[in-house]
Image 1 (spheres, rainbow, N blue to C red):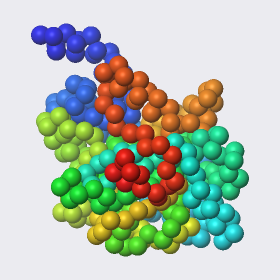
Image 2 (image 1 turned 120 degrees about the vertical axis):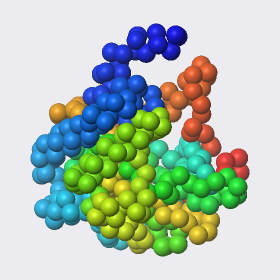
Image 3 (image 1 turned 30 degrees about the horizontal axis):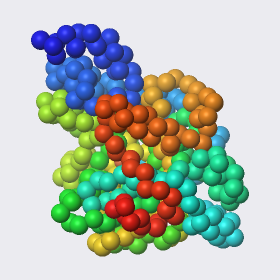
Length: 347
Ligand SMILES: [Fe+2]
């Protein structure tokens, strides 16, 4: 009874959420309705979001070259090797290696993800980092693929793979998956060589395209996820890839100074690491409301938001934990350098 009253009260909110980035089939009885998804609710959202992002991207085409645009259209990602001249790259790596600023870690299976935020007070003391973050190569590709002319969430990310005992379980990021029902962008600028056996990022070429088979797959997945009250980041098996006429994943075992920017509506995963390994990269992501019909509207225009999109959610997370309304996901680990293990963390 209480549940029914709650659902009735929240119904307007659940309905409005159809036009947000909400992807879970668990939290919202409309998005999670088996009947509505059989009738095509999920597929309708997928198609509408795809149409809107394609429309928005037209206004951002000037930010990247024709070659890059063609590469994205064909593959769903853009890879740029030797991005920076050697002297600038060396200066950037030196600054990052010497960062001692507050960082947080998140633990998934036997992997540790550390984020070292590049907030304005960090950037102002590090001219090479500042120049990189303002460079056209970095800002343009992320904005074009993401489909918004807004500042992404930025940090130095360290992945400690196989960092904790095997008993901790598999890193869920190593399963091939799509992030959500619409186009989103993630970018990795690798500061060191990524060996093939140390869990490189993998991406299924062309899997960002909305083909007929993909839509049929999305529909089936949406009904199954509604039945199982699952989340919205669908996994895909090798057999299903074949059904979608998609190739085997491409592994980005790339040299240092390579930038990869990908649309994570496409299928991707962290490759399995055959031994304990550490990867350090400048990392960005961007995920505003996919139904917005404008490319601007950057929350970074609000006071104190610019350069702080990584740390602001942590403030809210801490508050929720204090009020007993949420669990800690990102744990403070002091001021370790990126790539440096910490005693109290698991890295
Ligand atoms: Fe992902």
